[in-house]
Image 1 (cartoon, rainbow, N blue to C red):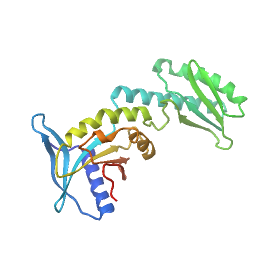
Image 2 (cartoon, helix red, strand yellow):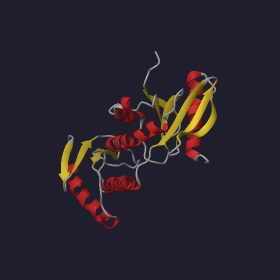
Image 3 (tube, rainbow, N blue to C red):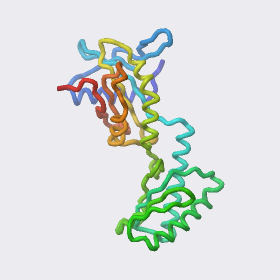
Image 4 (cartoon, rainbow, N blue to C red):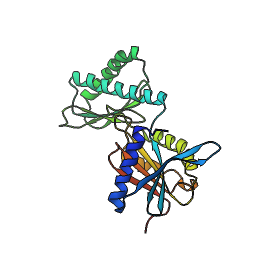
Length: 246
């Protein structure tokens, strides 16, 4: 079966990492290596350098369509709210927004109603202020000199650059890693999961990823020796090593 473009790109990225970090020119010896004939479960690539072997399974960070749509919608509403406040002359603030779930038909009215209340609060706000509007929590933080409004995420809120929230990221990792563990049921290999976050999709930085992965008990995944993470398909970072190199 032909590999997907992102799988090929991720594999090439990992090979460059091995070349740079280990000074070793690894090559692909096989792909779609079956580890469970009954179910045809397999891992993506077998890599070889002399007698050494790596079993490489690639995992793309994707949210289910329903949650992705919610996150993008929330991001759009947050952005519209910031634009409306700036149109009214409210500037020099950092604003933390909650997550939103508002139909497109109601969105314009919703933004205007929330902006009415935030504007009143902002006009007299001199220190960091939390306020609740229709059950949702907002935070206004005066920041003289920024010349606008800097939106920040809070409790699952999106921004103009949709990002993974930590609970979402943890949920996806917990749901997918058990299957990756089964796919890497092979002996005589260094068994690696490479998790990638593609450009143009929900983004996550390495610090957030490390925070989440450290909260998961990975010792129960006996077939996973190492987990690497690549954000934006530019560079990979080792996030978990079952037996760290001394």
